Image 1 (spheres, rainbow, N blue to C red):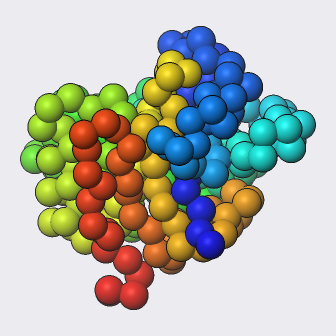
Image 2 (image 1 turned 180 degrees about the vertical axis):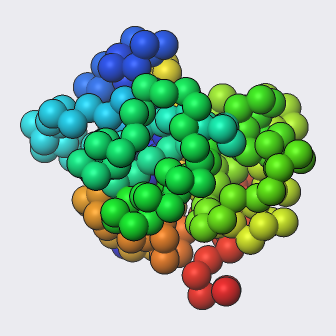
Length: 227
């Protein structure tokens, strides 16, 4: 059947969002015809909510809720999926100058994966850093669709992904309830756990999809079978 997930969202746990997780899920339930996502990943800024438990909400709304993090590095902002004790011990997620290559390598070694987000965005995106610095090693995917992108940013993101052979994902980057699910990632596999999500991000088949009015989702992105 496959799974559609919004891989990038911020709840009221992030300092610049006031969106309750329950409100996100209720919005999705009411608009499934417009945004048929099966779940969301909460990527709170510079932190990981280790003790947060959304199982009751998952059961009530029939949607998956996973926890990840958005951190800030010397190559821009990045989403960390599969956050674990080893990563939290080694890296201070509140540090806005994390070493991107060290983070990517440590994540791969500990069973996590790092995905640069909104790479076409000025200052905090990968595209701008690649203009002056060597490309990062072992990047498996980047976010080419972002619900908060401005004109031209997604084109630069896609060009970067195609140039370097990265897979492509999408996420709403929602800080407001009404924006949840506008961009997402469609996986061919059924995904219900973070372990499954990390596995599919590394090795699976998926593509970024766009539910914004008037937008057309791109064709399937680079996948493992194409390598």
